Image (cartoon, rainbow, N blue to C red; front, side, top):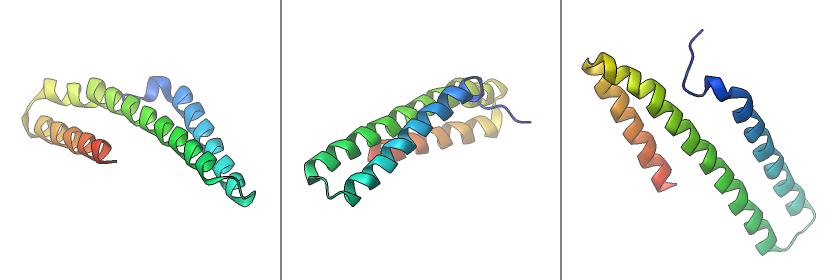
Length: 95
């Protein structure tokens, strides 16, 4: 079984994702209940920030584990992992 950088904190990560899932379900209920637009937008912002926090944590783990391991080995795999991480950062910045 492959272990990734987040493996040590997997349960914590899953708990955070479950809370975000609950936030999104709450958003659905807000729309169904015809809640005021700004209140919904405020909750969307909170859910977005929560997802961004998860993404940053995963990125930190990826850099510390997967990228660092590949760089220590060197070669093309190292270059590919650095490029992969750079692309992921670019996607996060654009989001």
